[in-house]
View 1 (tube, rainbow, N blue to C red):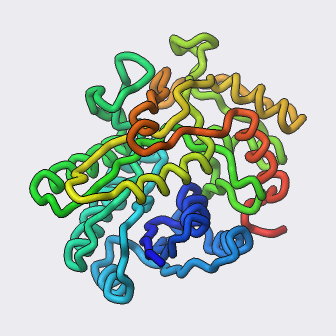
View 2 (cartoon, one colour):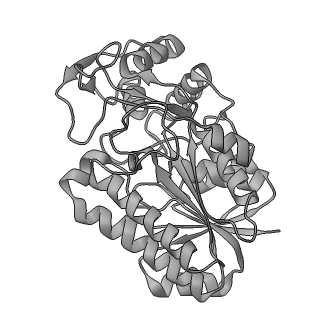
Length: 339
């Protein structure tokens, strides 16, 4: 059975992808420093999949940790999620993001090279497009970044492209996520950020269960139909399945390839609030606040290339997103912490 190293595998997207990897017949091995996740997710993954993923608590910036890991296992490929992801925090603490996201990726690539494992799926982001001139966004659009988080992703992308150009043994697939939301349909795993959530859907869900008083909507004067930001919200299980197709797609002379992973459409913040209220039968109080630094008005994908080359497309819509988001939060009002 083929082993896949999953960095950041106890996080939101990582944990759902681990489930999909197991279901697809792979053996995932997780390394995570638990900076923004819980090892309690490992029991939940086992409950869903029937298999216990091997877990190493460690930081990918540690050369010794990576050497021990790669010496023990022969990995078919690496799926690289380990990274900080809050736009606002990255503006306040840019060096933390460059250290974790960029330095961590460099150390990982060095370890992969030492142990002859040169296939990597990179967890990138639509933030590498900066403030796009139009939507939907295509892979060929100019790349830039409006915040340190996006810049850290773009820097790693650039490194991977340069490495693939210099050495044809490397095979990289860059998956540029739009806005992952929802949860596993079982309600056993979902998004549980530390502290106050930075992303829309966990914030809404925590308001619904009474953990937070109200939602702050950052910006009500964008050039959008209702003045609030428009994003391409993709179900996390659709996103997880995209990683399976990416792992399957590796082949000699693969080089470095980038794909948008989104639905091809967008919803505004207010539309998302209304859809969640319908699914949960809960009222979500909110207030319109000033725009956040680094945010843009509208972002949604053209996912055609991913569909054409990887055979992947999103299968779940907004009703499934809201159903599964609410199912996770109502069953786990305090996240993975019981009581």
